[in-house]
Length: 479
Ligand SMILES: [Zn+2]
Ligand SMILES: [Zn+2]
Ligand SMILES: [Zn+2]
Ligand SMILES: [Zn+2]
Ligand SMILES: [Zn+2]
Image: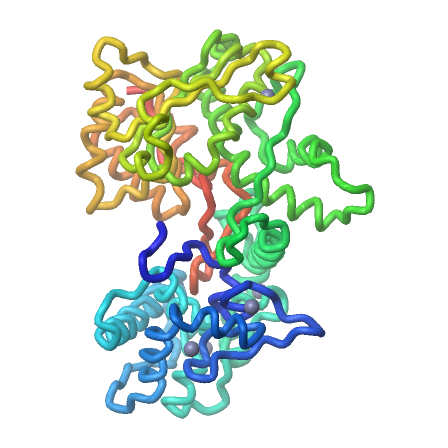
């Protein structure tokens, strides 16, 4: 979500670690050297113009960070030894404790909470993956023979000395991540992240250089027959999509790969829906011949709005479906779509292939909770073919709002699937659904989604684990 103080939202990870300009995201090259902000030594800029343009926004944080560097009374205890517990969760806890203390300190100085961007500058400060030390702490505590150095493969994770690198290199470079479709190691996934961030900055047509936005591409063609997705993943369907992109013959394999990963972010939506429909209907093909297939979308309003056009791919992949109606239901749409689009079923413009044979796409935005949506519809409520809840991040604090919705979905036996960004999110959501007594469809519950986005980002200091759109299925149920 956009914050009022710092209007930017998803900054590239590379900006937080100082590998690209903090204002315009230009990367260092033989012709361009980035310089660190001389006061905080924490963020980097490509030019004095960029630094000046960013100063108003950066100043409060920069001043506070400068004090953090030089305040000698303020002693942040730091234990640089390594104990036997090298589990990802133990390492994470170590980082989060330090970050908590330091963010409290900064917030007191600034007299306000840190913005999400500022919090990320703190969290992504290059630190040893084993002991979490940073160059700033090495200096303060006078630790001998330490310096935070990047991994030579990805330059996104760091270690402070040879012994600590030896402790983590195996898991970082070789151990397949359980969170990747195709089981790649963290270092490989970081290299993808680096390529994909550079790509989205390069192709961005957003006039605001500080918000590159996602790469948008929507395939236009109708398949002659439906090809089942079960037992498949991205690698099985990659080639046809790359063909559709109609790239220059000179495009390298690396360029094709980076584009394909970028489009999976939005393609993940229709493909996850079709995959789930197949499994839930288990051999019953009626849904593939519907005059109108109806999908209800709950959760993450901004994610749903920005990927709105992608639903047409369902019409393209399933030739038998004549019309698709997508109903978006969540609190918050009033801020994101024009008032004339609220509670109105609208026909959308479709591609020429769809138009020629009369395929239709409709959508409707409802700014309300799902339970009040059902109440308002009353007898006009039509049970959808699928209800999909995109990464709701259900936590103990937000769960009460979801209880009524899940109870209703259960009572009305609506086929439902909940997706998550990460494994811990999926586990929390599974436990929540379980506590409400839903009858899980086991093959779609607490598992990786083979069609989760390939634009994975690692989380700061996470030795394992990734975050990506629809990466996990938290749970599916039909009652
Ligand atoms: Zn710049
Ligand atoms: Zn600064
Ligand atoms: Zn270390
Ligand atoms: Zn690496
Ligand atoms: Zn079309």
